[in-house]
Amino acid sequence: MKRRYGRLEKTSAFLRSSLFWLVFAGSTVLYGATLWMLALFPYERRFRIILTWSRLNVWVLEKVCGVRYRVEGRENLPKDRAAIAVGNHQSTWETLALSFILPPQVWVLKKQLLRIPFFGWGLAMSKPIAIDRSAGKSARQQVIEKGRERLQEGLWVVIFPEGTRVHPGEVRRFKPGAAILAEATGYPIVPIAHNAGLFWPRHQFIKYPGEITVSIGPPIDPAGLDREEIGARVETWIRRRMDELRGVVDDA
Image (cartoon, rainbow, N blue to C red; front, side, top):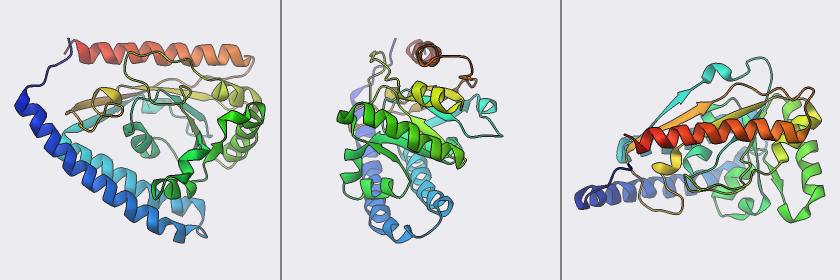
């Protein structure tokens, strides 16, 4: 069963979460307002500076709100080439933590995110593959072309196939973009599952103490597979591991 929080625990979590949000908002404004000055710097240097923002907020979340994390399966990360990382999307936490858990990377994301003051300005400095989802086939082609370029540069491409944050236990269809990119480029897909939504719930102010598990699966080689088979293998691994992680927490 899921743990039930008493009134004192909820009050404490609210106060701690308030302090975290102050740090998060302040650091986002500071970084977003100054990162534009790095536009002429090489991407590697910009990325290292952006990582300091992610690390800061994950560290504050742990120290203030008690949200820890552990990573299993690091040995599954390819060492000799870039890859396509595909994971479930439950909260804002993974958008912070994966930036430094994985090798240097770019993200496939909605173009609208770049318009968010400060936060979007910072995103724009990270060489994202920003797409207009209403563009249909042209958006897919953009993912293939830009994704191939980034991969050939040695950068990982991170994709959340659900397309939006999804509550733990809720099922949303995986979009085929990652499988299409793998089929077109031949780069492997590394599946990732986590249970961050149990501690940083979607659209909720309060953060709950506990340990997030990030599970990295074996790379899936697209050679000899079509996009349907690639997508099915990725989704099967992620969903099975998500269910296992949710069960571990529920039974605690």
